[in-house]
Amino acid sequence: MYNGNFGIAVQASSKSLIVKNMAGWSGPSGYGSGYSIGAGNTYGPIILLGNGQIATPATGWENFDDYTIP
Image (cartoon, rainbow, N blue to C red; front, side, top):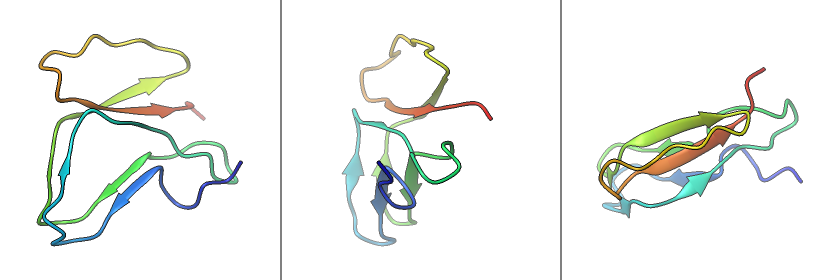
């Protein structure tokens, strides 16, 4: 199902904390970034996963982006 432009989108200057998420983008092309985080927000590292890869978090604060390599 198409979920819009991003899996997680946060507006600029919303002063949000974005940590420990998993997002992907299922747009019409089937691949793309899962995150759009505007300036003024704080977020943990975004680790790109692709085609079924599994990653071990280094700190526990990571965000994961599950995408399909075109």
